[in-house]
Length: 156
Image (cartoon, rainbow, N blue to C red; front, side, top):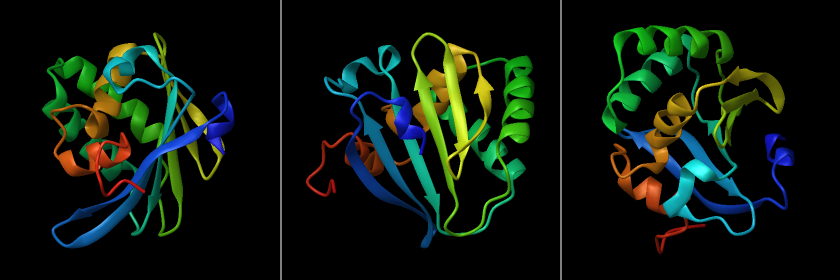
């Protein structure tokens, strides 16, 4: 699994994302010793999503762009570039499949599908906004954010 890229990985938290009553995925955040949620940009961590439904990779990429807009502004040129990169990296998924992103501080993000490398987007601003979908205060799923960061009584 992609968590092998982390030194002494431990699970900070895990939670289920549900949209309009449908279970979408189980998310888990894996971190290294000394992880500090207040300093996400400077840390290596892995976000693992185990899908509970089938989705097209291009739909995952488009939804990611939509959610990244909640986190912070970016240009249409960046949106086109990032969308194209994600469409190439994100495969179609079936229930049980895993997509994992590893945050590389100052560099960008590496992606894995079912533990196999898919590629990297070498852009720290992309990584900040992408992982912000789950981990920023502007997330559309604030309870899941708290659970992933281990800051909620429902953290598992």
